[in-house]
Image (tube, rainbow, N blue to C red; front, side, top):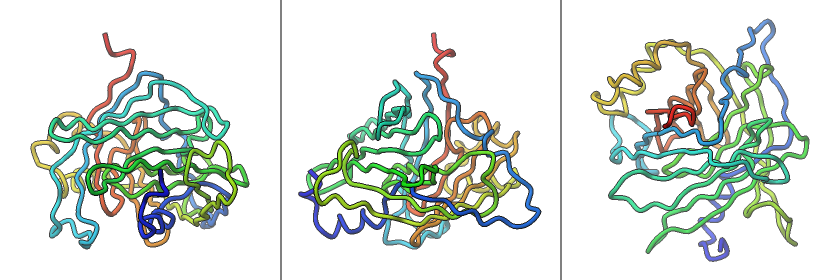
Length: 278
């Protein structure tokens, strides 16, 4: 199906999407270790959470005070089952747009149960007359987990490395392939990409400031958003080939509470655990 995409679009996707290879740490002497392993989500089958996004045009500079933004879109994430992806046990996560006036196909991605590395994503890109399905798979020659920048779209799926040893600035290399990655076909070429991950603490008062730049005040003041300022927040920045992704993570949250990938800004607005449902 990807063969029908224009050559220019394929070249853009090849430059933007990727998956793991090796990791080289660049750490400052005496730097205090951040407990990133405590930030890793602990999903149970049936868990759901809702993310709201606003997007800015790709051709406009990312100045939050000047750019035109889309209307907010709600997305529901759900973990319905475990599946194999790239021969690894993975969480299957299904994402559906909840806007009644939008008909957007479902996005599905698979994260490794052990390392939380992104293994595969199937999403849809807008084309004249509808949407074009695209599947990307990610692997690692070294076997080390790596941050991944997903396809640049209205739904940001970018994943950092969250483990106890990750601190300061680290550099990784990962590879991606078009298709499911279950079997390599003749001529299949992976795209290698270097990515940097920078981790730091964030003052809690900055969280509300960031939300206020992109979301309506009535939404920023809802009880769930207010609760996000009651616990410490850790910032993760992912940088590769001119792309910069900024995420804010908090313990006991299934997804970053805030993310800006330069095109789409998202915030976590609600969480529903399986055991909490009747």
